[in-house]
Image 1 (tube, rainbow over the protein chains, first blue to last red):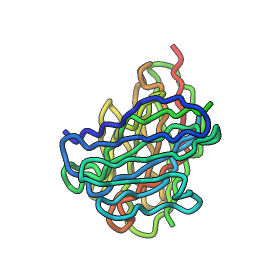
Image 2 (image 1 turned 90 degrees about the vertical axis):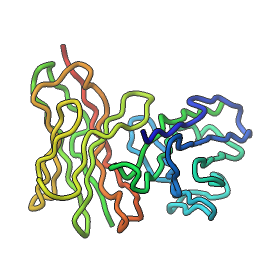
Image 3 (image 1 turned 60 degrees about the horizontal axis):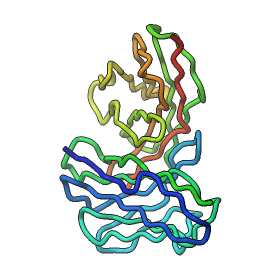
Image 4 (image 1 turned 180 degrees about the horizontal axis):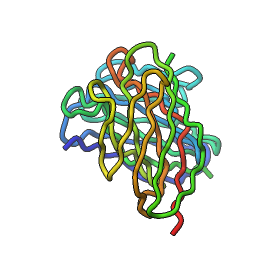
Length: 117
Length: 115
């Protein structure tokens, strides 16, 4: 139980395009989801907290107009990297707050590797 | 503010030898502490967690960790490593309501296993 699916797992696109990443909780409802960014050989840095039905809360230094987050349902949050550039290339990981469904506070997706050419 | 420090960036250990990964945290209250493992290109898998109670916690894959409040530490141990234990390990603090359910991760320790 408590599976989080993240799609796509890998995406390569040209500079200037927008890329959407989906994060789904498959067997539980998640009112809160989290989006992390991980550079090679570095730790996970929280980008934003996504709350169902309300605006996301962004961490300091994260451009909210660059990284659009939508959490329209209790099982789906999306991260859109708008007008992506090579410096946006990174590994993006989402997690879902289990809200007591399990004994873990967050369940992680397998990540999305984004490469901007 | 909460923070986590993993002093060792890399650790190389021989297969069958014991392993200990260090983790020090800073947190204003009783912390929720976690150890996660990440294989290359993958998400995070929870190894074990400490919320309260017994300070020695057992996890999956033969790992254990000990919470020492006086030292603000939560070190991860395994008596005998297997080649499949080669991965990146992250210590994290938070995950409770007081922290907004947020997790703060340490910088990670990469474990290499020699045959």
